[in-house]
Length: 192
Image (cartoon, rainbow, N blue to C red):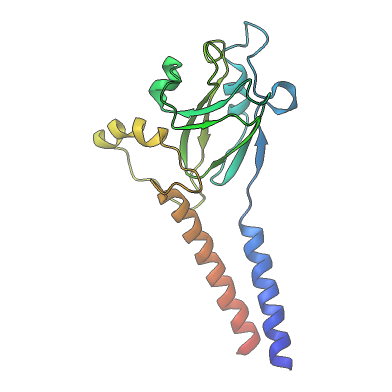
């Protein structure tokens, strides 16, 4: 009986530690001030969403919540080139339900824009930089990596898309290592 109570306490402690290690945040794009819409003033048109994003720290597995009028607007995930040119004819990912959530499931740059004609040109677009997970080192960029960076940064990495899960795997493996170390330490305290 005492053995089972120790195991129960151990499992509870270990699961509490793991929950504490894995956290993510949902960000409402534009906060309550703007939401996802064409910026109202000409002065801020090209600044509103990128200024908003620059004040946030985005991590792998954080989510972006886009609030807008259903079917009157949309959210597109696009390549860097399409973002810069406001081309919406080749989106990587398209959402138009009015309450769209995008998971930032890899480190790097994500490019967003409205799919409604001329909204992007009026400033309804945004770049989000997702930080590398703690403890993960990035290899130095050489000429080949720089040339390929535009295409790799623009690929969507949604939960059901496994095109490039390296960043997510690195985050999982560092969390798993910490989890295993803590488990071994707790097991040692209980049984040795």
